[in-house]
Structures are given as structure tokens and as C-alpha cells.
Image (cartoon, rainbow, N blue to C red):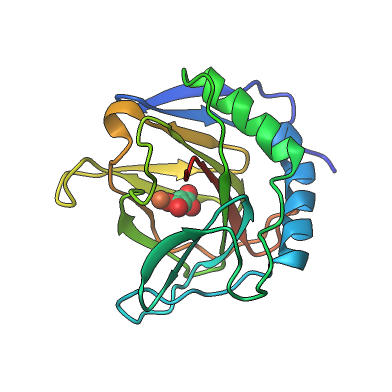
Length: 213
Ligand code: SIN
Ligand code: FE2
């Protein structure tokens, strides 16, 4: 496939204290990462979870790792088992771990060892409302977020929901790492614009690596 940007070197964009965008960092691995996503989703299918408030999420989700994040009428939880299949979540593919280690190191977080990888799938119109990632016990560990496929607008705010928001476009291969002072900053994804990407068709995928134990 002809990719006009194939030889464009990755570059870094600071986002906030403790937060950085590693532009195009995952681009070379994107096809292999997507193969991993499809493999995981054969064992643990994408599904639309229901929030404690009773809303069905527009984002389709699955997980890999020792722990997987989910939500249902009772709340949010990390669990070793997929409630849909009754099985353990699939293991995190080694390429995922390798990329995550390189990205966290590049962002200044050494020794980040994720045990949970949430995989989000966005179709046209799908959004993720402003939220904090706060279900993890160890907040000294960062979040590593990998974007694949169609572009989306990422909102990144502050510790209060009402804090002003930065809006940045996340494109194929971009990796965002946040931790330290910004670990609990509010963030979200605006409704996805329809489009087509050669690797992901009409979707955007996001891998979010976390330490959940
Ligand atoms: C998330 O906050 O869990 C995902 C953000 C994204 O899709 O980029
Ligand atoms: Fe999040």
C-alpha cells in the first residue's frame, strides 16, 4: 500500500504536565496491532456495555490482559473474567506490551507494566463522554493510549470536569501518554466523523494500557 507518510519520523507534542502525544509512534506496528485486535476479539467479542446509569455505550469494547475493565448496571470494575464468555480475557499480545513499554519510556515513565488493555472501537457518530480514568488502585502508573484508523478529536481537560478543554486530533498511529500531575485529568472523544481507513475500514480503534492491580 502506498503511504505518503510512511517515512515521516515520529515527533513529540507536550499536552500538559505529565502528558505527551507521541505522534505516529505506533504507525509502523499498526497492521500487526490490528491483527492482534482481531485475534483478541475472536475470543472476547466487541460489545456495547451498559453504564450504571442505564445507558448503552456507543463505543464497542473488549479487553485483553490479566484484568479487563467493564461496566454494568452495578458499577465499573476490573475483573479477570469476561462476563460475556465466562472465560479469562485473552493475554496481552507481546507486540502490544512491547509497544507500550517503548511508548511509556519515551514519555518518561520507566517500568510501566500494564496488566489491562481496554480496546475501544468507534464507528461514525460514536463518542466517549468526558471522564477520568480512576478505577485503578495505583495512580503513579500512567495511561498509554494508542490510536488506530480513522482520526478523532480528543478532549483533554483538568482535574475538574468544568476545567477548560484542549482539543487535539488523534490520528492513525498516535500514542498519548498521561500520568503524574495529569493522571486524573478529564478526557473524552467527540463523535467520530464518518470515513474510511485502509487498515480499519469505517472504524477507529483505541488501545488503552493500564496497571489495574
Ligand atoms: C479512553 O479514554 O478510554 C479512550 C480514549 C480514546 O479513545 O482515545
Ligand atoms: Fe479514559
